[in-house]
Image 1 (tube, rainbow, N blue to C red):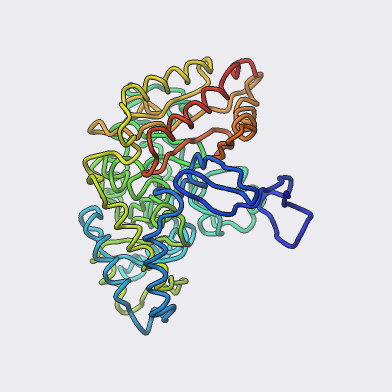
Image 2 (cartoon, helix red, strand yellow):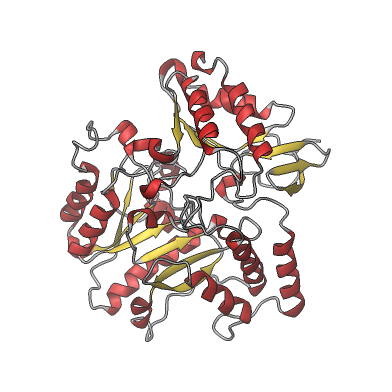
Length: 448
Protein backbone atom coordinates (compact mmCIF):
# COMPACT_ATOMS: atom_id res chain seq x y z
CA UNK A 1 0.00 0.00 0.00
CA UNK A 2 1.21 3.51 -0.81
CA UNK A 3 0.56 6.58 1.28
CA UNK A 4 0.35 10.23 0.34
CA UNK A 5 -1.87 13.20 -0.32
CA UNK A 6 -4.88 13.32 -0.38
CA UNK A 7 -5.27 10.06 1.57
CA UNK A 8 -5.44 10.11 5.34
CA UNK A 9 -4.84 13.02 7.70
CA UNK A 10 -1.07 13.52 7.50
CA UNK A 11 0.13 16.81 6.01
CA UNK A 12 2.95 15.31 3.92
CA UNK A 13 6.17 17.16 3.15
CA UNK A 14 5.76 16.57 -0.60
CA UNK A 15 2.15 16.48 -1.77
CA UNK A 16 2.88 14.93 -5.18
CA UNK A 17 4.83 11.91 -3.88
CA UNK A 18 3.61 8.42 -2.96
CA UNK A 19 5.30 7.15 0.21
CA UNK A 20 6.15 3.59 1.26
CA UNK A 21 5.54 2.80 4.94
CA UNK A 22 8.90 2.41 6.72
CA UNK A 23 8.76 -0.29 9.37
CA UNK A 24 12.32 -0.61 10.70
CA UNK A 25 15.98 -0.05 9.93
CA UNK A 26 19.29 -1.82 10.44
CA UNK A 27 22.72 -0.46 9.59
CA UNK A 28 22.51 1.24 6.18
CA UNK A 29 19.16 -0.37 5.36
CA UNK A 30 15.53 0.66 5.73
CA UNK A 31 12.60 -1.77 5.33
CA UNK A 32 9.01 -1.04 4.40
CA UNK A 33 5.92 -2.86 5.66
CA UNK A 34 6.09 -5.39 2.82
CA UNK A 35 9.66 -6.32 3.73
CA UNK A 36 11.26 -4.51 0.80
CA UNK A 37 14.78 -3.33 1.58
CA UNK A 38 16.17 0.13 0.75
CA UNK A 39 19.72 1.48 1.01
CA UNK A 40 19.64 4.71 3.02
CA UNK A 41 22.25 6.37 0.84
CA UNK A 42 22.55 9.66 2.72
CA UNK A 43 21.26 8.87 6.19
CA UNK A 44 18.01 10.72 5.55
CA UNK A 45 18.96 14.40 5.53
CA UNK A 46 22.58 13.57 6.43
CA UNK A 47 21.48 12.66 9.95
CA UNK A 48 22.02 8.93 10.53
CA UNK A 49 25.78 9.03 11.05
CA UNK A 50 26.03 5.72 12.91
CA UNK A 51 23.41 3.64 11.13
CA UNK A 52 19.96 2.39 12.07
CA UNK A 53 19.08 0.00 14.88
CA UNK A 54 21.84 0.68 17.43
CA UNK A 55 20.55 -1.13 20.49
CA UNK A 56 22.71 0.60 23.10
CA UNK A 57 21.08 3.94 22.29
CA UNK A 58 17.59 2.56 22.82
CA UNK A 59 18.75 0.91 26.03
CA UNK A 60 20.13 4.18 27.39
CA UNK A 61 16.89 6.02 26.62
CA UNK A 62 14.75 3.23 28.09
CA UNK A 63 16.71 3.16 31.35
CA UNK A 64 16.45 6.93 31.73
CA UNK A 65 12.72 6.88 30.96
CA UNK A 66 12.26 4.38 33.80
CA UNK A 67 13.86 6.87 36.20
CA UNK A 68 12.78 10.28 34.93
CA UNK A 69 11.16 11.73 31.83
CA UNK A 70 11.05 15.51 32.09
CA UNK A 71 12.05 18.24 34.53
CA UNK A 72 12.03 21.98 33.93
CA UNK A 73 15.42 23.39 33.00
CA UNK A 74 15.10 26.32 35.41
CA UNK A 75 14.43 24.02 38.37
CA UNK A 76 16.62 20.91 38.06
CA UNK A 77 19.64 19.45 36.34
CA UNK A 78 20.24 15.72 35.91
CA UNK A 79 23.12 13.29 35.90
CA UNK A 80 22.50 12.48 32.21
CA UNK A 81 22.83 16.14 31.23
CA UNK A 82 25.92 16.81 33.35
CA UNK A 83 27.74 13.68 32.23
CA UNK A 84 27.02 14.16 28.57
CA UNK A 85 28.03 17.84 28.64
CA UNK A 86 31.30 16.90 30.32
CA UNK A 87 32.04 14.23 27.68
CA UNK A 88 31.19 16.51 24.77
CA UNK A 89 33.29 19.34 26.20
CA UNK A 90 36.37 17.11 25.99
CA UNK A 91 36.20 17.06 22.17
CA UNK A 92 35.08 20.66 21.55
CA UNK A 93 37.52 23.17 20.04
CA UNK A 94 39.57 24.93 22.70
CA UNK A 95 37.69 27.86 24.22
CA UNK A 96 34.19 26.51 23.56
CA UNK A 97 32.94 25.12 26.85
CA UNK A 98 29.32 26.06 27.60
CA UNK A 99 26.62 23.92 25.96
CA UNK A 100 22.98 24.95 25.61
CA UNK A 101 20.89 21.92 24.62
CA UNK A 102 17.91 22.32 22.30
CA UNK A 103 15.68 20.25 20.02
CA UNK A 104 16.70 21.02 16.43
CA UNK A 105 19.19 22.79 14.19
CA UNK A 106 16.93 25.71 13.32
CA UNK A 107 16.18 26.28 16.98
CA UNK A 108 19.89 26.34 17.84
CA UNK A 109 20.51 28.87 15.06
CA UNK A 110 17.80 31.04 16.61
CA UNK A 111 19.52 30.70 19.98
CA UNK A 112 22.84 31.71 18.43
CA UNK A 113 21.26 34.85 16.94
CA UNK A 114 19.82 35.72 20.35
CA UNK A 115 23.10 35.07 22.14
CA UNK A 116 25.00 37.34 19.76
CA UNK A 117 22.42 40.08 20.29
CA UNK A 118 22.39 39.69 24.03
CA UNK A 119 26.19 39.64 24.23
CA UNK A 120 26.34 43.10 22.70
CA UNK A 121 23.44 44.38 24.80
CA UNK A 122 25.39 43.40 27.90
CA UNK A 123 28.53 44.97 26.38
CA UNK A 124 26.86 48.34 25.96
CA UNK A 125 26.67 48.09 22.14
CA UNK A 126 22.91 47.91 21.67
CA UNK A 127 23.15 49.06 18.03
CA UNK A 128 24.66 45.70 17.02
CA UNK A 129 21.91 43.27 15.99
CA UNK A 130 22.34 42.29 12.35
CA UNK A 131 23.90 38.95 11.38
CA UNK A 132 25.70 38.57 8.05
CA UNK A 133 25.23 35.26 6.19
CA UNK A 134 26.15 33.88 2.78
CA UNK A 135 24.10 33.27 -0.32
CA UNK A 136 23.68 29.58 -1.22
CA UNK A 137 23.69 28.67 2.45
CA UNK A 138 21.19 26.77 4.56
CA UNK A 139 20.69 27.53 8.25
CA UNK A 140 17.14 26.34 8.87
CA UNK A 141 13.46 27.02 8.22
CA UNK A 142 12.20 28.97 11.23
CA UNK A 143 11.83 32.66 10.44
CA UNK A 144 15.07 33.81 12.04
CA UNK A 145 17.06 30.94 10.55
CA UNK A 146 15.37 31.37 7.17
CA UNK A 147 16.35 35.04 7.24
CA UNK A 148 19.97 33.84 7.31
CA UNK A 149 19.50 31.04 4.76
CA UNK A 150 20.76 32.03 1.32
CA UNK A 151 18.61 29.64 -0.70
CA UNK A 152 16.61 32.04 -2.84
CA UNK A 153 13.74 29.73 -3.79
CA UNK A 154 13.19 28.79 -0.17
CA UNK A 155 13.15 32.44 0.93
CA UNK A 156 10.95 33.88 -1.82
CA UNK A 157 7.46 33.02 -0.49
CA UNK A 158 8.24 34.45 2.94
CA UNK A 159 10.25 37.57 2.09
CA UNK A 160 7.79 39.98 3.78
CA UNK A 161 8.28 38.06 7.05
CA UNK A 162 12.08 37.82 7.03
CA UNK A 163 14.58 39.91 8.98
CA UNK A 164 16.74 42.21 6.86
CA UNK A 165 20.04 40.36 7.34
CA UNK A 166 22.83 41.10 4.80
CA UNK A 167 24.34 38.35 2.61
CA UNK A 168 27.58 37.94 0.67
CA UNK A 169 28.70 35.43 -2.01
CA UNK A 170 30.06 31.98 -1.05
CA UNK A 171 33.52 30.54 -1.84
CA UNK A 172 32.12 28.55 -4.76
CA UNK A 173 35.10 28.11 -7.08
CA UNK A 174 33.25 25.67 -9.34
CA UNK A 175 31.05 28.57 -10.45
CA UNK A 176 32.93 31.54 -9.05
CA UNK A 177 30.56 34.50 -8.58
CA UNK A 178 33.46 36.81 -9.46
CA UNK A 179 34.60 34.91 -12.56
CA UNK A 180 38.03 34.33 -11.04
CA UNK A 181 40.21 31.30 -10.30
CA UNK A 182 41.99 30.26 -7.11
CA UNK A 183 44.65 31.19 -6.01
CA UNK A 184 45.03 34.13 -8.41
CA UNK A 185 41.71 35.47 -7.08
CA UNK A 186 43.41 36.32 -3.77
CA UNK A 187 40.26 35.19 -1.96
CA UNK A 188 37.96 37.80 -3.40
CA UNK A 189 35.08 35.87 -1.79
CA UNK A 190 36.38 36.68 1.70
CA UNK A 191 36.97 40.32 0.78
CA UNK A 192 33.30 40.44 -0.19
CA UNK A 193 32.42 40.02 3.48
CA UNK A 194 34.42 43.08 4.46
CA UNK A 195 32.73 45.10 1.70
CA UNK A 196 29.30 44.14 3.04
CA UNK A 197 30.31 45.00 6.61
CA UNK A 198 31.56 48.44 5.54
CA UNK A 199 28.42 49.15 3.49
CA UNK A 200 26.08 48.12 6.30
CA UNK A 201 28.14 49.78 9.03
CA UNK A 202 30.40 47.62 11.27
CA UNK A 203 28.78 49.11 14.34
CA UNK A 204 25.46 47.46 13.41
CA UNK A 205 26.78 43.92 12.89
CA UNK A 206 26.67 41.41 15.76
CA UNK A 207 27.86 38.25 14.00
CA UNK A 208 28.82 36.46 10.80
CA UNK A 209 27.44 32.94 10.30
CA UNK A 210 28.70 30.28 7.90
CA UNK A 211 28.87 26.56 7.24
CA UNK A 212 32.57 25.56 7.09
CA UNK A 213 31.68 23.17 4.26
CA UNK A 214 28.56 24.34 2.41
CA UNK A 215 26.14 21.43 2.48
CA UNK A 216 22.50 21.30 1.47
CA UNK A 217 22.37 24.11 -1.07
CA UNK A 218 25.30 23.55 -3.45
CA UNK A 219 26.58 20.13 -2.41
CA UNK A 220 29.67 19.87 -0.21
CA UNK A 221 31.63 22.95 -1.23
CA UNK A 222 34.94 23.08 0.62
CA UNK A 223 36.42 26.58 0.94
CA UNK A 224 39.84 27.38 -0.55
CA UNK A 225 42.72 27.27 1.89
CA UNK A 226 43.05 30.56 3.73
CA UNK A 227 39.37 31.45 3.37
CA UNK A 228 38.16 30.68 6.90
CA UNK A 229 41.19 32.24 8.58
CA UNK A 230 40.57 35.37 6.49
CA UNK A 231 36.92 35.46 7.64
CA UNK A 232 38.07 35.07 11.25
CA UNK A 233 40.51 38.01 10.89
CA UNK A 234 37.82 40.24 9.40
CA UNK A 235 35.46 39.42 12.27
CA UNK A 236 38.17 40.13 14.85
CA UNK A 237 39.10 43.42 13.18
CA UNK A 238 35.55 44.77 13.43
CA UNK A 239 34.69 43.18 16.80
CA UNK A 240 32.13 40.82 15.24
CA UNK A 241 31.31 37.33 16.54
CA UNK A 242 31.80 34.28 14.30
CA UNK A 243 29.04 31.64 14.36
CA UNK A 244 30.01 28.21 13.02
CA UNK A 245 27.03 26.19 11.74
CA UNK A 246 28.16 22.56 12.15
CA UNK A 247 24.67 21.04 12.02
CA UNK A 248 25.61 19.05 8.91
CA UNK A 249 29.41 18.82 9.21
CA UNK A 250 29.81 18.28 12.94
CA UNK A 251 30.25 15.06 14.93
CA UNK A 252 32.93 13.60 12.68
CA UNK A 253 31.44 13.99 9.22
CA UNK A 254 34.74 15.29 7.76
CA UNK A 255 37.33 13.29 9.68
CA UNK A 256 37.56 15.71 12.59
CA UNK A 257 34.97 16.15 15.29
CA UNK A 258 34.10 19.52 13.73
CA UNK A 259 34.88 20.65 10.19
CA UNK A 260 36.22 24.03 11.26
CA UNK A 261 39.10 22.26 13.02
CA UNK A 262 40.69 21.41 9.67
CA UNK A 263 41.67 25.05 9.30
CA UNK A 264 42.64 25.76 12.91
CA UNK A 265 39.87 28.35 13.32
CA UNK A 266 37.89 28.64 16.56
CA UNK A 267 34.46 30.29 16.35
CA UNK A 268 32.78 32.27 19.11
CA UNK A 269 29.56 30.26 18.82
CA UNK A 270 29.06 26.77 17.39
CA UNK A 271 25.77 25.11 16.46
CA UNK A 272 25.30 21.32 16.33
CA UNK A 273 22.39 19.09 15.29
CA UNK A 274 21.59 16.21 12.89
CA UNK A 275 24.30 13.60 13.56
CA UNK A 276 24.60 14.77 17.16
CA UNK A 277 21.92 12.21 18.02
CA UNK A 278 22.36 9.99 14.97
CA UNK A 279 18.69 10.60 14.17
CA UNK A 280 17.42 8.67 17.18
CA UNK A 281 15.68 11.72 18.67
CA UNK A 282 15.41 15.48 17.99
CA UNK A 283 18.48 17.15 19.46
CA UNK A 284 20.80 20.09 18.90
CA UNK A 285 23.09 22.40 20.82
CA UNK A 286 24.35 25.96 20.83
CA UNK A 287 27.87 26.15 22.27
CA UNK A 288 29.90 29.19 23.25
CA UNK A 289 32.72 30.58 25.37
CA UNK A 290 32.51 30.75 29.14
CA UNK A 291 33.33 34.46 29.13
CA UNK A 292 30.25 35.15 27.00
CA UNK A 293 28.00 33.31 29.42
CA UNK A 294 29.52 35.28 32.31
CA UNK A 295 28.03 38.44 30.82
CA UNK A 296 24.54 36.94 30.90
CA UNK A 297 24.31 36.40 34.66
CA UNK A 298 21.98 39.36 35.10
CA UNK A 299 19.83 38.57 32.06
CA UNK A 300 19.92 34.86 31.07
CA UNK A 301 19.42 33.87 27.45
CA UNK A 302 15.85 34.46 26.28
CA UNK A 303 13.83 31.32 26.81
CA UNK A 304 13.92 28.58 24.22
CA UNK A 305 12.60 25.04 24.27
CA UNK A 306 14.96 22.81 26.25
CA UNK A 307 15.23 19.09 25.69
CA UNK A 308 14.01 16.37 28.01
CA UNK A 309 16.44 14.17 29.89
CA UNK A 310 15.43 10.97 28.09
CA UNK A 311 17.06 12.30 24.95
CA UNK A 312 20.25 13.14 26.81
CA UNK A 313 20.50 9.59 28.09
CA UNK A 314 20.24 8.39 24.49
CA UNK A 315 22.76 11.03 23.47
CA UNK A 316 25.29 9.69 25.96
CA UNK A 317 24.93 6.29 24.31
CA UNK A 318 25.33 7.90 20.86
CA UNK A 319 28.55 9.62 21.89
CA UNK A 320 29.85 6.36 23.32
CA UNK A 321 29.24 4.79 19.92
CA UNK A 322 31.20 7.57 18.21
CA UNK A 323 34.12 7.02 20.57
CA UNK A 324 34.43 3.30 19.88
CA UNK A 325 37.47 2.22 17.90
CA UNK A 326 39.74 4.82 16.36
CA UNK A 327 39.93 8.45 17.44
CA UNK A 328 38.12 10.81 15.10
CA UNK A 329 41.04 13.18 15.09
CA UNK A 330 43.24 10.49 13.56
CA UNK A 331 40.96 8.46 11.25
CA UNK A 332 38.36 10.12 9.01
CA UNK A 333 34.94 8.70 9.83
CA UNK A 334 33.80 8.56 6.21
CA UNK A 335 36.52 6.00 5.66
CA UNK A 336 35.63 2.45 4.71
CA UNK A 337 36.33 0.05 7.55
CA UNK A 338 38.70 -2.25 5.68
CA UNK A 339 38.37 -1.78 1.93
CA UNK A 340 41.47 -0.29 0.23
CA UNK A 341 40.87 3.44 -0.03
CA UNK A 342 42.89 3.82 -3.20
CA UNK A 343 40.69 1.31 -5.04
CA UNK A 344 37.45 2.93 -3.89
CA UNK A 345 38.73 6.38 -4.78
CA UNK A 346 39.81 5.26 -8.26
CA UNK A 347 36.45 3.63 -9.01
CA UNK A 348 34.62 6.71 -7.81
CA UNK A 349 36.72 8.92 -10.08
CA UNK A 350 36.09 6.63 -13.03
CA UNK A 351 32.37 6.82 -12.28
CA UNK A 352 32.57 10.61 -12.26
CA UNK A 353 34.42 10.62 -15.56
CA UNK A 354 31.66 8.49 -17.11
CA UNK A 355 29.31 11.44 -16.68
CA UNK A 356 31.29 13.48 -19.16
CA UNK A 357 32.40 16.10 -16.65
CA UNK A 358 28.98 16.57 -15.07
CA UNK A 359 30.04 14.93 -11.81
CA UNK A 360 32.40 16.18 -9.16
CA UNK A 361 33.81 13.68 -6.71
CA UNK A 362 34.36 15.19 -3.30
CA UNK A 363 37.20 13.38 -1.63
CA UNK A 364 40.65 14.21 -0.33
CA UNK A 365 42.53 16.71 -2.47
CA UNK A 366 39.92 16.68 -5.26
CA UNK A 367 37.13 18.19 -3.19
CA UNK A 368 34.78 20.62 -4.89
CA UNK A 369 35.64 24.27 -5.21
CA UNK A 370 39.41 24.01 -5.36
CA UNK A 371 39.61 23.43 -1.63
CA UNK A 372 40.75 20.37 0.28
CA UNK A 373 40.69 19.32 3.87
CA UNK A 374 44.13 20.11 5.36
CA UNK A 375 46.23 17.31 6.71
CA UNK A 376 45.18 14.82 4.05
CA UNK A 377 41.85 14.00 5.68
CA UNK A 378 39.84 11.82 3.34
CA UNK A 379 36.06 11.89 3.75
CA UNK A 380 35.70 9.03 1.32
CA UNK A 381 33.05 9.21 -1.35
CA UNK A 382 30.84 12.16 -0.88
CA UNK A 383 29.71 12.48 -4.49
CA UNK A 384 28.17 15.68 -5.79
CA UNK A 385 26.55 15.65 -9.23
CA UNK A 386 26.15 19.16 -10.53
CA UNK A 387 22.73 19.86 -12.00
CA UNK A 388 23.55 20.97 -15.54
CA UNK A 389 21.94 23.46 -17.87
CA UNK A 390 20.55 22.97 -21.36
CA UNK A 391 20.37 19.36 -22.46
CA UNK A 392 21.83 18.21 -19.12
CA UNK A 393 19.27 19.90 -16.87
CA UNK A 394 17.53 16.61 -16.02
CA UNK A 395 20.67 14.63 -15.18
CA UNK A 396 20.09 14.50 -11.42
CA UNK A 397 16.38 13.73 -11.80
CA UNK A 398 17.17 10.77 -14.05
CA UNK A 399 19.87 9.54 -11.66
CA UNK A 400 17.42 9.71 -8.76
CA UNK A 401 14.72 7.80 -10.65
CA UNK A 402 17.14 5.06 -11.66
CA UNK A 403 18.39 4.60 -8.11
CA UNK A 404 14.84 4.37 -6.75
CA UNK A 405 13.74 1.82 -9.37
CA UNK A 406 16.38 -0.74 -8.44
CA UNK A 407 15.43 -4.06 -6.85
CA UNK A 408 17.06 -2.67 -3.70
CA UNK A 409 16.39 1.06 -4.15
CA UNK A 410 18.96 3.64 -3.04
CA UNK A 411 17.28 6.60 -1.37
CA UNK A 412 19.27 9.71 -0.60
CA UNK A 413 19.55 13.45 -0.57
CA UNK A 414 18.98 14.49 -4.20
CA UNK A 415 17.82 17.88 -5.43
CA UNK A 416 19.95 19.88 -7.89
CA UNK A 417 22.87 17.75 -6.78
CA UNK A 418 23.20 14.29 -5.29
CA UNK A 419 25.00 13.62 -2.02
CA UNK A 420 26.04 10.15 -0.96
CA UNK A 421 27.21 9.79 2.64
CA UNK A 422 27.88 6.45 4.26
CA UNK A 423 27.39 6.05 8.01
CA UNK A 424 30.35 5.03 10.14
CA UNK A 425 28.87 1.56 10.47
CA UNK A 426 28.96 0.77 6.74
CA UNK A 427 30.61 -2.54 5.85
CA UNK A 428 32.89 -2.95 2.80
CA UNK A 429 30.45 -5.28 1.03
CA UNK A 430 27.62 -2.80 1.65
CA UNK A 431 29.70 -0.01 0.21
CA UNK A 432 30.22 -2.13 -2.89
CA UNK A 433 26.44 -2.33 -3.31
CA UNK A 434 26.08 1.45 -3.17
CA UNK A 435 28.95 2.08 -5.58
CA UNK A 436 27.62 -0.55 -8.02
CA UNK A 437 24.18 1.07 -7.89
CA UNK A 438 25.70 4.44 -8.76
CA UNK A 439 27.73 2.98 -11.61
CA UNK A 440 24.69 1.23 -13.09
CA UNK A 441 22.53 4.35 -12.75
CA UNK A 442 25.21 6.48 -14.44
CA UNK A 443 25.31 4.48 -17.69
CA UNK A 444 24.50 6.83 -20.56
CA UNK A 445 23.65 9.65 -18.18
CA UNK A 446 25.82 12.09 -20.12
CA UNK A 447 23.26 11.89 -22.94
CA UNK A 448 20.25 12.88 -20.79
